[in-house]
Picture 1 (tube, rainbow, N blue to C red):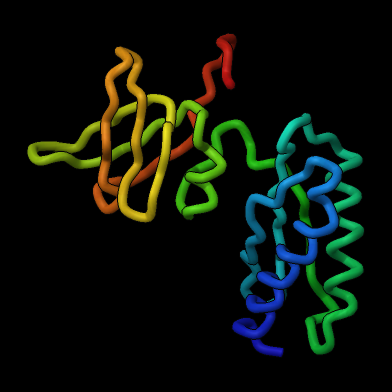
Picture 2: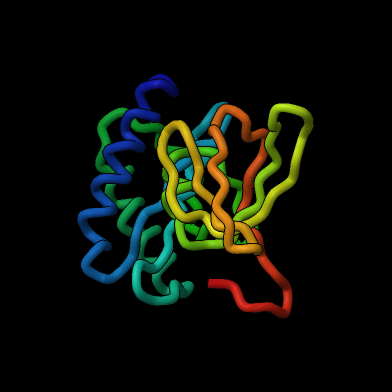
Amino acid sequence: MQKAEWLLKLADLKTYLEDLVSVEGIRILDVEDTGKYKPHITIFIYGSNRDIGTDDCQNVNRLAEVFLDGVEGFPQEYSLEVSTPGLTRKLRKDCDFQFAIGKEIEIWHTDENSARQTSGMLLSCSTNTLLLKLPDNTELTVPREKIKKAGLLFKWGGKND
């Protein structure tokens, strides 16, 4: 099985896991493969209405192993990691921005005249734009193509929602 084929199986893995763990309040944010010669699969999970613990990560890991071991032709040698998204997760994909709605984020973007760094609560996102609520309670719409970098904003010692 070539890498392109095993990447297609990872989409099936995400669907399989979503169906099994959603009843437990666990959501699958993303499934990534960063392996060059053999699969190195990272599954990012979060709680829809509760905190995620190590037991949750272990359970998702076991379910993923059962799925992958049952896929005919999938490389027998692979590494598998299950993790939460992290406090300062970089936002790149649509699923990352969807996950960040209602959270404080920081973006580096360009406008008509210069490069800017802006932080605020992500109110909504589409494939073309982000809508942020800024600290002064104004709203800012930023075209996605103008965003150079984005990430969750974690305030040490402060309140994060």
